Length: 200
Image (tube, rainbow, N blue to C red):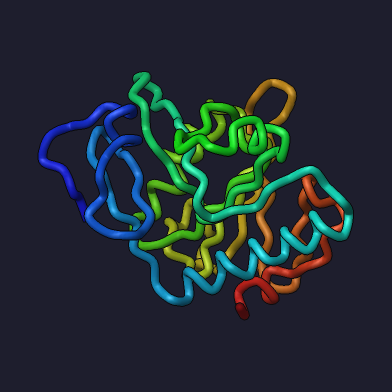
């Protein structure tokens, strides 16, 4: 749902007086309200809780949240305001300015997007923007197999895609389905299958 008739800058987006609680993104100058199903929220919460447990268990220096705004750039240089479903950010970066309302311009360690009807945003637009920003790890969680067959195969299967940024700043893809254990460089001891995530 679009809230604005005129195109806004990124700074205007950060200072915008939203009419109600919720998650909003700036996409091509327009403020978009992010509306999620209960299943979508269940998956995001399960993944965030799993990450929080790993952070605590391994005493990692990360902050996990579903409310972190980041500034990204399109190929044409247009600023976007994105709010991943789950974000993992270096705690030192988070703690550097605890009174800030502003979005991060620095890369997150990990971003998770749970695919909904606007699947091209996650598979194409955000993938390019997150790679350009330098987010080390990006998960696309397509529990409904909504993406195209080019990504999901034929027949289409629910899949979790994990993109890892290589030394050249280019994402390398790994796809996980069913009973596959998800491999995450950020959480090398993570022991969770795709089926466990999708059962949330």
